[in-house]
Image (cartoon, rainbow, N blue to C red; front, side, top):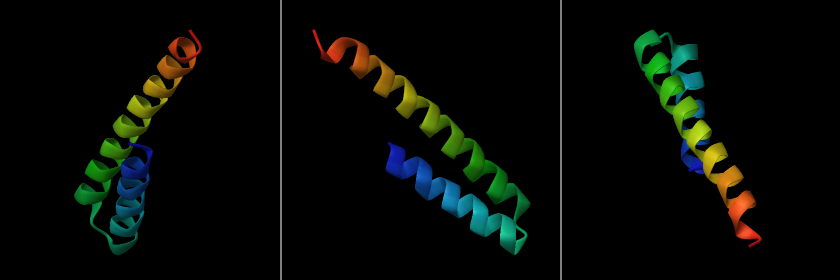
Length: 51
């Protein structure tokens, strides 16, 4: 999941540099959502993984 968010972040940066604003915005939103899900899963596994 972290890998996917990094890929979408790179896509957003490249699309933004080339002037594709809509694609850049969509890829950035997807990257943010995936990163948030990764963080939630990481925190959840930290809390429940030691028991």
